[in-house]
Length: 144
Image 1 (spheres, rainbow, N blue to C red):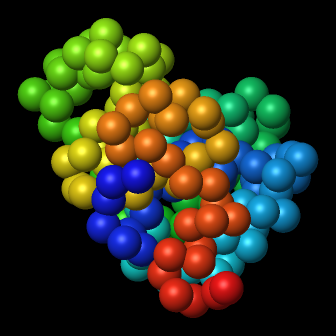
Image 2 (cartoon, helix red, strand yellow):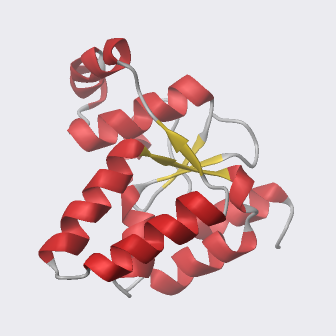
């Protein structure tokens, strides 16, 4: 796993576990609640993807609260790729077999030297790898 110790790019699936109370929501909640918000990052693509999913599920008010709590109030940092970086995403697809959203997350982590926190095994095929939320929190020294 490559990335600055304790500075995390939180993948879309981790946020959705909590928002949708899915099977791994407790692990995701524990991680998000154990790490200072200024050590967490979310990509612009994750914000859009979560909005699309929450909208389809009729959870617009929950999405609005998520954006307010996560981005506006808590200090989680937004990461945005520029046009040049977006044009390089097909190269990551070819190199690692990542789909578009995973390639975006990977490029954002590369750009900012972040550790990817995800339940998605596709990142295991990459040079950066990923850590599970249960393992990531311990890297900050905040919880065992």
